Length: 613
Ligand code: GDP
Figure (cartoon, protein in one colour):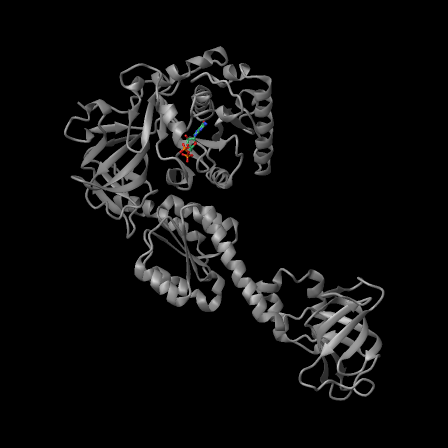
């Protein structure tokens, strides 16, 4: 006997929506999943709740039981056959539930800890959900931790809330308001789900406790309500299949298998399938379709139940030949009688090659490597937002040849001679090579951590560059001499800043043009080693900053200073010494941000003064 894991017997013939759970670490994602999975029904198989591959299936009867306490508050409709909840919380499974850049997750739960509010991965999750246009609800979890919370296990939130002392209600409201403001800062309007009049514009918040089960009925009710009302089109059965690979795993007795979420259509034993492989398309035949043995059957020999045929939505393990190089996060296609296999092979590889559009064709950028197609795509989206160019992308473990790609940047832009690796193994030899060459490898399984480390590294390099090139970073200024305070050793003059800004370290000169040859004769007075306004030392003086004049102390270690009264005098306009090199230095990323528009305009004028082309 092969029980169909996802029976679809429904008047509108909708399939089960797929639900994913995301959020910061320790917000209670795992616990909430456990709580949802638990049943109030004594004994038996939890109202038909079945463990699948990578997911748990909730038939509508189980949901009816769990949401019964909602009847006092909301009308209930049950159009879908059930709900498929992905077992592994977090980004990884969410990003892999994808098809051509859109999400196969029909609805996501973003868990926020009511005591902690928005955290880093909350924000990263919001970004992901938004990029993939995935609808979601917020579970505001751990309400039982509000001081003096009076728990009624598995109750609806509203019923429990009415029973709380005034102070608890107030604390709840204060925290809720704070979190709504924080969400607004992320560009999200939000509202408690039962006060939400506009589900399309406002994200619904469901207060929950994964410990007491309060609010869990509300959450399930809302998931059903939203998917049924707003997405019935996506939930219609399709004639073609829609499936994505969550994981590639070696299983004893079966060899390399793929764990697949089938979100629409059927899969059958013997089906010819096409999928994306690391080194090219894979075409193979389904040898076995497997789901886990129900708990009570565990004494049976096999860990798995075999199926001749399965129907969406469900999680299933596929055993077949040649799956070793299969790429997680890529689509799986079934070759039908009229299909062109070659075309399908190109089609699945598009999942990978499509991402090459993000690669900078000028050959400038970082090298990116990720464990799965979904995480690679998420990382590329992120880098695009941050305007970090990408030179090359890859999947799977990092080997020396991957690091060698990054080495190409050592000459062009050292700050980009970097590998950003998301949740992958780095080979020993690769690591050693990177060390020798001075290539940084960043490896993390949280995008934010990766990005933070990379930004910190870039800043460090920029700081070093600033130090190295400070000598040549001359900011433009024009000075008028007001008085000569000391002619030589040290030369001190009182000046007025007519244009630009005068900084410590800047070389100051006068420019004479030979009347006949028109040649520029530059008379270097020295570098600024002291700046004072009213006997107060300053590091920089901008045009218009003071009416009192600035005392400038100039030093020229060469001892070739021109002589006041003979070579230069008060009538000479003084300038910071501008050269081709000094202009290029200011254009360097280390200084570019510090140069104002007015500085660039002044530089254009000074190029004429100095005769720079
Ligand atoms: P995850 O990292 O998001 O999967 O978080 P877990 O589910 O592992 O939960 C992290 C910790 O918070 C564990 O110690 C849980 O027992 C606790 N926890 C989770 N949900 C709740 C809740 O609703 N109330 C309370 N008091 N503790 C919770």
